[in-house]
Image (cartoon, rainbow, N blue to C red; front, side):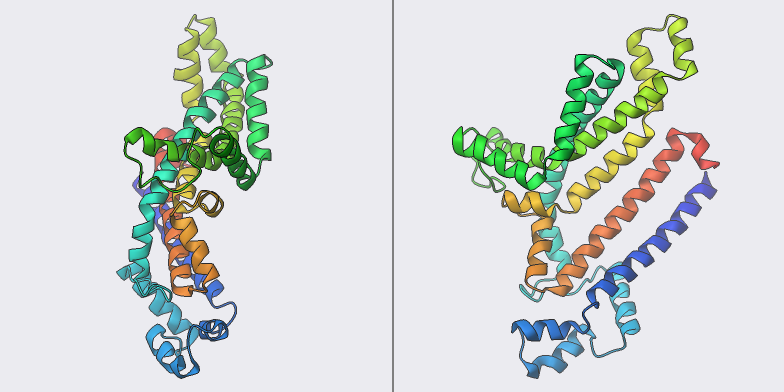
Length: 315
């Protein structure tokens, strides 16, 4: 087990270095970032040298990269936003709670719909329940999130007036009132992922249910609930576990479309605004933070794999 963790940790370091190199290279894809700022009028030509000194843009590219990764990864200093003059890390932490709340809400929707529908569709294969589950999955994967969000607003906020149309609900006076603001964004954000999880759970369950040890358990008189949840579901858990963890990380990391449609002040909207404003320190810092979260999440998932299925640690 120790060797397995050490190998994964080495892969983690290599992945972080590769990710930082890609992010930094993309930020310099159009050349010196000062040219972008001068073209849109944020700075005057007299500030060229000051900018170069402040952001180390007057040094060779490799030196810029080493300074950037040294400060960002090891010191948590991702620079200062050009638009707000606030530290990038401070802005990320300010917007993170909103994305965390929305991400957890959408993940909850994914889990309470995707897993039960997947299990039910597999157990009741070929019945009306299977048709309902697959129809749910087809619609979830076919409807674009931006269209789904707009339609939900049109139906439940404009026509019926049942739910608020957007924002995070700061002015809500009760817990129930605040929860209403989460329903449509969570459904919009989670339906596509729920459809994918449902199909993944269904296929994993079908594969396990057709295995010999499940047939043996049924032949020995083991109850249906024990066969489904104790034997079949437990042994089909690894693919859905990966999918669920990556879903949560992706939701927290920022969802530009959903946050824009519902005016949700999260990391996705912050990153989108930084791109529009050519705020390259905020843009690269935010992308690097998202990347680090993804890489560490995958590392944790790999460790969980080894505990769930001991065969993985020896493979």
